[in-house]
Amino acid sequence: MKNFDLIVIGAGAAGLFCAGVAGQLGKKVLVIDHAKVLGEKIRISGGGRCNFTNLNTTHQHFLSMNPHFVKSALAQFSSHDFIELVKKYQIPFHEKHQGQLFCDESAKDIIQLLLKECELGHVEILNPVAVEKVEPMDGLWNISTKDTDYVAKNLVIATGGLPVPAIGASDFALQIAKQLDIAVVEPKAALVPLAFTSQIFSAIEDFAGLSTKVHISAGKAKERYGFGQFDEDLLITHKGLSGPAVLQASSYWSEGEAIHVAWVAKEKLENLLAQEDSRLKTVDNLLIEFLPARLAKEFAKQLGIHGKKWAEVAKKTRQALVDLLCEWNVKPAGTLGWNKAEVMLGGIDTKELDSKTLMSRRYPGLFFIGECVDVTGHLGGHNFQWAWSSAYVCANNLIL
Image 1 (cartoon, rainbow, N blue to C red):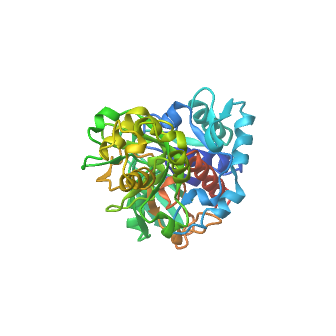
Image 2 (image 1 turned 60 degrees about the horizontal axis):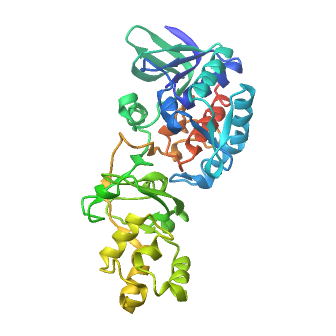
Image 3 (image 1 turned 135 degrees about the vertical axis):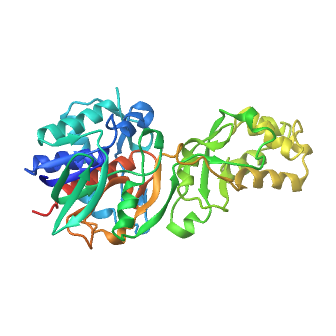
């Protein structure tokens, strides 16, 4: 039986960062992970460039049953704190859309940063090693693997969520919660493309690959959360709808609800259609002011006004066009599932955790951090920032 101050189960973003910080604070730390290659989700993130944080991260960029839960962790370790660490390692990066920060070269730079932080903290990493049993024992935590038992005062569960099972995602954290009678908010796929069984376009394969900026919301997001509307690019695929707009909206969508899309801002469209010289233009030519040509033609066809001059369109049909483009409502059949999801919505109920420390309220020395907690960020680096913030707070609040 080997003794440690801290055992971290899960060597992803949150787990490795927590281990590195704790090790450099003088703690004896062990990390256990079942994967052969560590940090695979980091490696594939951001198209291989890792959108490692966002300059503008606030609590409003997260979904949770308790929208205030993230405030303490973000205040203790902000995106600017992690940026300073990235600069310390001389990792070149750039800002893209709305404060999103990406590595210039490779996501592997972030993985190496985390491993170096662990090395500086003399952290021991065991992989690929599966944890077979977790049990509290006389104020300690006993972790059993096939060959050895490990004991520590502090146990951190940082095993992520259910997306991308092909790279090792599992429900380990949820299993531990069930074992210990810790409440869980039912998980579902988030930041995920949406599928449709009904024909939303005449032949959707003809439009696959088309992308355009839209204003989007899902279901009753505004009533539920007070926000959840996005101005982002929507991408049409062979199976349905994707792109940043749809991924964002999917986190707010519930089965049976519609998504609401404004392909064109209503004021802009009405101003264009009211112009005198618009009367002699065809509907298709008017709409390409805002939409890709194929999509403009499709919407004109749906109302039977393809090729018609605007002056020839009946008043009732004119209003129908405005409604169609500015208040397009469709019901998805579902999401494309965990294989295509970027994150998990739901997880360990935040009521079970102290927001200032991430420690279980009922089990001293037990912590849950990162994606396995019911905290889900918007697209754009916010989920990584939650990993860094929750890991840092945990590492600084271990039981001595």
